[in-house]
Length: 182
Image (cartoon, rainbow, N blue to C red; front, side, top):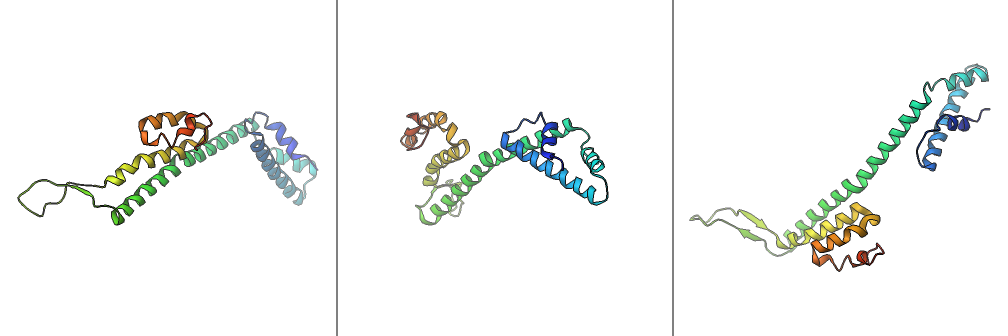
């Protein structure tokens, strides 16, 4: 019985992944090669011939290493994009639209901007919900927290607190240097 993991690890020397990720890739590829060899043995081949055919399934180990590296890197980029951009944006949109719906039902009457006209049935030019507009900087600050995470929060908190003085009290823990909200 061959040690397929040692064989795969010997061929995939240039794999620049985290140790846990690299071990996972090596174990998965070794399991695939072992299954392939066992299948060839069941078909009546000698062990040497089955091993030779199994190893020959991979024509270029360097090309396979590059393909694995590219696939794992793209996978991580997409995961970070979803976590840091799409999910916070979706949550911000849902929260702001839900807040607008609540203000429309339960909140104060909107401020209507209309043109002066001789007709009494002129539609308003704009309907402004001031409480909702005033809540948008806070919702934007929440999205910033979701997007940048705890590691980059400290550097950007000062800029955010200067752009909206009402948030200074919320972000004073960042200015103290511990990087956590109080």
